[in-house]
Length: 81
Image 1 (tube, helix red, strand yellow):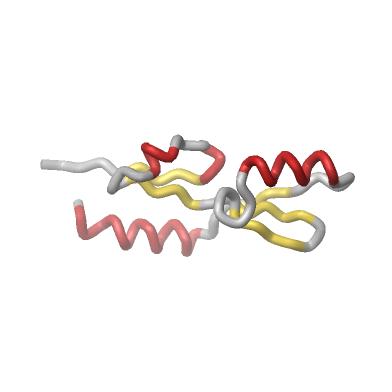
Image 2 (image 1 turned 180 degrees about the vertical axis):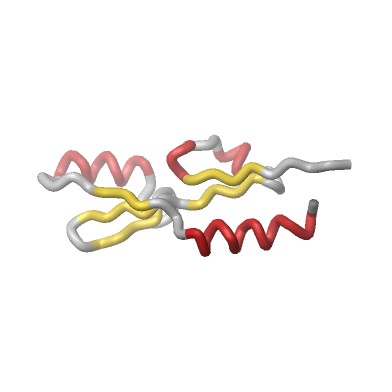
């Protein structure tokens, strides 16, 4: 029997019930704001993001997860397939 895993970044905004499934992984984007870096959804939730967006004059930038972060998750999932 083959299995399928889903690996995405936090911009997909998957509902919590999907994220809780055994073979679904979400890698957080990095939000960079005034020299500070936050992991999307972990260190800065959506409500906190919009609140800060209203207060700050400078817009944040984002960066994707590193190749190493993706490789780590692939390595964790691979034995199950």
